[in-house]
Image (cartoon, rainbow, N blue to C red; front, side, top):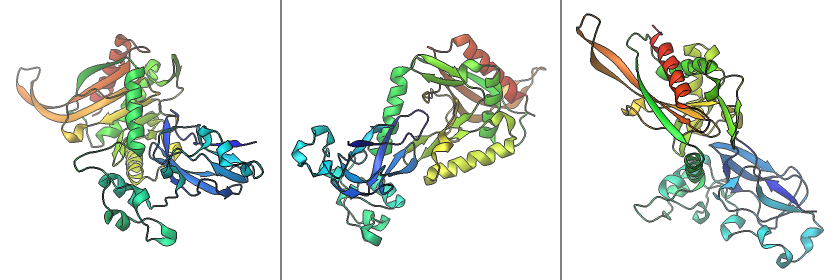
Length: 354
């Protein structure tokens, strides 16, 4: 009996992944545990191995979004594989020539190909065993029209996930201002992540995950931190930040950011998130409406720090350092009052740091 080879479930949300490399051709004979493909989801790469001996058919196309846990090819027993190709169902045939060829490229070559709009299928590799190098890509002509950008691969997956969030949630955004004049030290993002985790302990309705119309509160707060990479926005998870020091949190956030940008994080770095923090303060943004990171029900946006004049208790004008916080929540699961109470508690915690 033929068996399906599935896209691994790499992330908690179980959204789409893409095949970034096939190491076999359509109709190739493979052995059990042979490496047959490389896949990615949310910037996490994973190898796919053959579950048995046989012949592979129906290879999905490169960079075509595939739901995690869904078929990427079918493995036929050697006896079954002798039947003429015409007797194989249309669903089991390769969808395009692109899917039937083997592309092996270095990570830097893939990155440059996306930046320059070069189709790797058209590039001749000069590296070992025909591996495509960054130099090969830079010397190849771009396949996209000048001035145009096509969302492919992980960029397309991220876009689909964002659209899904907007379509499946009832987002409402509350904004407030926090005075952090008396906050000592640096590591603003780490301090906010820690304070958010502590505040979530008293507001479990914002701390958890959804599955359709069902919300499951989390036993602990694990905060995902949005990181901008060359392929788009990803959100690795900081485990139990409420129990960590600011210095340890800052080190962990830096590790996750460096790993995400280098494409070196593993699937466990993205697991078990219950809430998201995204900081655009370094870009000079004050307030914004962040998109909920499914399956979470809330996300906190952090704006830039600004020094502004304020009146003190004696009526004198004094400089104060203020920052805008923007909380977007799914109104289908969270009402406005509990969301506002969480935001007020967060402000209290941050303003109490001296």
